[in-house]
Image (cartoon, rainbow, N blue to C red; front, side, top):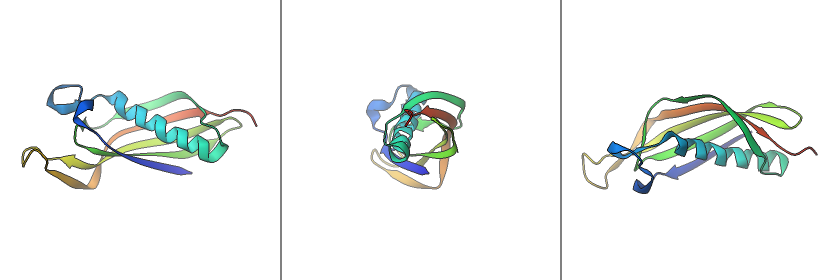
Length: 122
Protein backbone atom coordinates (compact mmCIF):
# COMPACT_ATOMS: atom_id res chain seq x y z
CA UNK A 1 0.00 0.00 0.00
CA UNK A 2 1.32 3.40 -0.98
CA UNK A 3 -0.29 6.84 -0.47
CA UNK A 4 0.94 10.14 -1.91
CA UNK A 5 -0.13 13.73 -1.15
CA UNK A 6 1.05 17.02 -2.65
CA UNK A 7 0.96 20.42 -0.99
CA UNK A 8 2.02 23.94 -1.91
CA UNK A 9 4.03 25.55 0.90
CA UNK A 10 2.79 29.13 1.36
CA UNK A 11 4.96 32.01 2.61
CA UNK A 12 3.02 31.94 5.89
CA UNK A 13 4.81 28.66 6.76
CA UNK A 14 8.30 30.15 6.44
CA UNK A 15 9.81 30.12 9.90
CA UNK A 16 13.44 31.11 9.40
CA UNK A 17 15.50 33.51 7.31
CA UNK A 18 15.70 32.74 3.62
CA UNK A 19 12.05 31.58 3.66
CA UNK A 20 13.07 28.27 5.28
CA UNK A 21 10.33 26.02 6.63
CA UNK A 22 10.95 24.06 9.83
CA UNK A 23 11.33 20.28 9.68
CA UNK A 24 8.20 19.73 11.76
CA UNK A 25 6.15 20.90 8.78
CA UNK A 26 7.18 17.83 6.75
CA UNK A 27 6.64 15.52 9.75
CA UNK A 28 3.08 16.84 9.90
CA UNK A 29 2.63 15.93 6.23
CA UNK A 30 3.96 12.44 6.99
CA UNK A 31 1.25 12.16 9.66
CA UNK A 32 -1.39 13.06 7.06
CA UNK A 33 -0.33 10.33 4.61
CA UNK A 34 -0.02 7.83 7.48
CA UNK A 35 -3.61 8.61 8.47
CA UNK A 36 -4.84 7.87 4.95
CA UNK A 37 -2.87 4.61 4.90
CA UNK A 38 -4.59 3.54 8.14
CA UNK A 39 -8.03 4.49 6.83
CA UNK A 40 -7.51 2.59 3.58
CA UNK A 41 -6.04 -0.52 5.25
CA UNK A 42 -8.02 -0.67 8.48
CA UNK A 43 -11.01 1.68 8.28
CA UNK A 44 -9.63 3.74 11.18
CA UNK A 45 -7.36 6.79 11.43
CA UNK A 46 -4.99 4.91 13.75
CA UNK A 47 -2.41 6.53 16.01
CA UNK A 48 1.18 7.46 15.24
CA UNK A 49 3.40 5.58 17.71
CA UNK A 50 6.94 6.58 16.72
CA UNK A 51 9.40 7.82 14.14
CA UNK A 52 12.70 6.09 13.53
CA UNK A 53 15.63 7.42 11.53
CA UNK A 54 14.30 10.83 10.43
CA UNK A 55 16.73 12.38 7.94
CA UNK A 56 16.47 16.03 6.88
CA UNK A 57 18.41 15.93 3.61
CA UNK A 58 17.68 19.33 2.07
CA UNK A 59 15.70 22.46 3.00
CA UNK A 60 12.04 23.13 2.28
CA UNK A 61 11.31 26.77 1.44
CA UNK A 62 8.19 28.85 0.93
CA UNK A 63 6.92 28.41 -2.61
CA UNK A 64 7.84 24.74 -2.85
CA UNK A 65 5.40 22.07 -3.94
CA UNK A 66 6.11 19.09 -1.70
CA UNK A 67 5.10 15.53 -2.50
CA UNK A 68 5.01 13.14 0.46
CA UNK A 69 4.65 9.38 0.22
CA UNK A 70 4.03 6.68 2.80
CA UNK A 71 4.57 3.05 1.85
CA UNK A 72 3.73 0.12 4.10
CA UNK A 73 6.81 -2.01 4.68
CA UNK A 74 5.57 -4.28 7.48
CA UNK A 75 2.16 -5.31 8.80
CA UNK A 76 1.83 -6.55 12.37
CA UNK A 77 -1.31 -7.55 14.25
CA UNK A 78 -2.05 -3.92 15.20
CA UNK A 79 1.01 -2.05 13.96
CA UNK A 80 2.09 -0.92 10.53
CA UNK A 81 5.62 0.18 9.67
CA UNK A 82 5.77 2.89 7.02
CA UNK A 83 8.60 4.27 4.89
CA UNK A 84 8.21 8.01 4.27
CA UNK A 85 9.76 10.24 1.66
CA UNK A 86 9.21 13.94 0.98
CA UNK A 87 10.31 15.42 -2.33
CA UNK A 88 10.19 18.98 -3.66
CA UNK A 89 8.65 18.70 -7.13
CA UNK A 90 8.44 22.46 -7.84
CA UNK A 91 10.53 25.29 -6.39
CA UNK A 92 10.09 29.05 -6.38
CA UNK A 93 12.58 31.11 -8.40
CA UNK A 94 12.48 34.58 -6.81
CA UNK A 95 15.78 35.33 -8.56
CA UNK A 96 13.78 35.44 -11.84
CA UNK A 97 10.62 37.21 -10.62
CA UNK A 98 8.42 37.30 -7.49
CA UNK A 99 6.08 34.62 -8.90
CA UNK A 100 8.50 32.49 -10.95
CA UNK A 101 8.75 28.77 -10.21
CA UNK A 102 10.16 25.69 -11.89
CA UNK A 103 9.47 21.98 -12.00
CA UNK A 104 12.37 19.99 -10.57
CA UNK A 105 13.28 16.99 -12.68
CA UNK A 106 14.28 14.92 -10.89
CA UNK A 107 12.50 15.97 -7.70
CA UNK A 108 14.69 16.87 -4.71
CA UNK A 109 14.42 14.42 -1.79
CA UNK A 110 14.21 16.63 1.31
CA UNK A 111 13.18 14.27 4.15
CA UNK A 112 13.03 10.51 4.73
CA UNK A 113 11.85 8.57 7.76
CA UNK A 114 10.48 5.32 9.03
CA UNK A 115 7.45 5.37 11.29
CA UNK A 116 5.11 3.06 13.16
CA UNK A 117 1.36 3.47 13.43
CA UNK A 118 -1.02 1.49 15.57
CA UNK A 119 -4.62 0.64 14.71
CA UNK A 120 -7.40 -0.74 16.97
CA UNK A 121 -7.77 -4.51 17.33
CA UNK A 122 -10.43 -5.95 15.08
